[in-house]
Length: 117
Image (cartoon, rainbow, N blue to C red; front, side, top):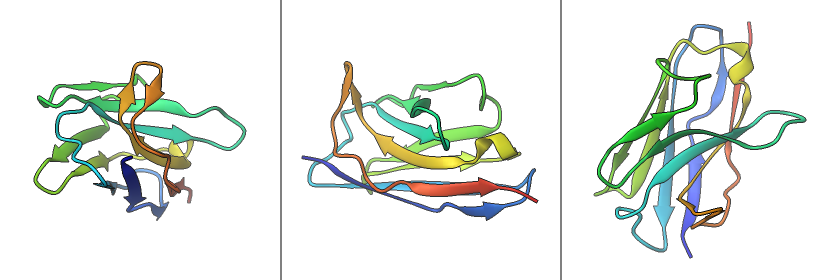
């Protein structure tokens, strides 16, 4: 099974930027669509961005124009560049590979992003 480790989170002021990384191990993810999810306190986990094996991307309306998802298949890693961060972006961010109604990998610990002045 694919194991996923997220990193790069932290505390940032509104308007700031962060770059998240998701390193996969156990199997190559190069042929899979990969995605970033987030879960804010008291809310359900939501899908925020996806990238297909061919590099096509889809974004949730809430982050469109501010976040960019990318992948480096040679490193088996997916990234999320987050700009113009807002307090409502505060959440634990996770990555995985959506497959139908499920996901390919086991959920990692996620990485905490806190946007606050």
